[in-house]
Image (cartoon, rainbow, N blue to C red; front, side, top):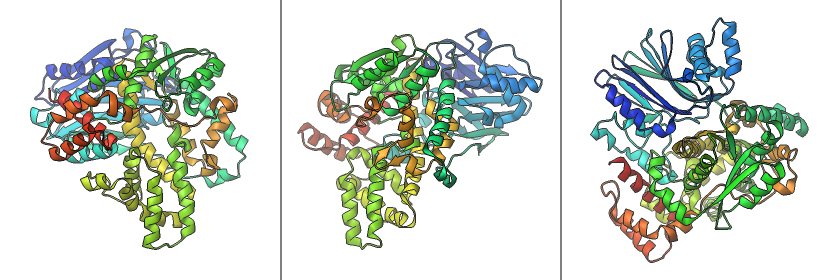
Length: 611
């Protein structure tokens, strides 16, 4: 895990490059390197994980190629053997050397041979071309700026800040801001700044002759393999287990200590259980809350004791959360409204304090195996609406209101995403009307398309589309950003075992009845976990990894909210509306706490960014 930055721009000098890499020093405190020649600049900050020797130093050169690289190629040893058969030799045990020689041999399509997570830049001096490449699932971030025949790139938005002009640094993209206020994050390949974009997952960019072209090299579609419906359950569990064991063991490849985030849920319990059996004694890390509705530490502790891990846990108090909040935008480079960012940073710090340099998270289990509660609820409502047939407008309104009753405020963003999924293109635009009308308005918008889809397809089709949408949007732009920035702030590497592309491709083909059966989510995944743990250890009500956001907004952060939102940036927002919200907030009246948090978080980011 590292940080990278660079540009092709003869008008900029080496000082700009060094400022760019200094901005991401926490991503790589072990080493740094720079290459600058004729306006071609590549910079690197290294966090040493595999081959700790100086032989892994970057930028790395091989013949006409220069490489800066963030991530890990877990199967680098196998790729090295394939390259050796082609006549290549190696001077180190670094996956970076394997990567640059793989690129030399096979070009940008070399990534199709990799099992890993990565964002890297290769400059070919002979071709005078820059390649930017991002991993299949988007685990590793990569931002870029392109204008007037120039290009710049970096692991984070902060890396690009020294390169941008003063005007570009404050050029907020109104569509991105609107999306953030709706969803709590910025996605769709955009960034909060109009001139800067994110390279999409599973894509590479080639920049040559002052122009760029972007190519997709991998895609996954969530479409059930009908032939699998004839397979036995045991056969599918066997295949899932073989893939999961391989994927999880690959994530233990390192020359430094590796730990696991253990929440007590199905996904992290499966990662821990498989590795405890196949790898050996593990270090596990759990956090708890004083609020019982959010605290899963007791469940995690029981699983850790059963598996014999070296277990560490700590309680995230309101006071500690406030301390983390003050550093929030040292951690995050864009506005981010996911309240679980705070506990993620806290548990990352706990792992770092106990000597870890790598930690395994367990994101994507819900997206891949139908784990979200909203999936089962939508499917249940689908069945009800299917029975309605061609209902009239009044019945449609009634059904929409029924769906709305299921939807807490925090669902608004995803309901809007689902509206786009089913053909509604205006979901992204923030308006006071949608705030006043609440979830019923969004669900009223979604329902006609939803009903039309339901009468023409089946519940499996619906689950597949919802899962794919969450996998390609919510997971990439919210969950993976959260884990990457939190771990990197503490100079540790976060790895995602469920995002092995082989496991993703398996799950994408899995028929719905093996994901949700009789209202039981993650059906097949739980069958696999049952081979490692007894059901009473993991058959618990799902809480998810969340924070008591409403409590914090209502109580602990009250004065800070008033201070920040009363004196915050005024040009971007309708101050009268914010003042009205604050008046209700001060008076203890009902208020949209989620939106209040999004606004508060944006103001904190803006104050940090414009300094």
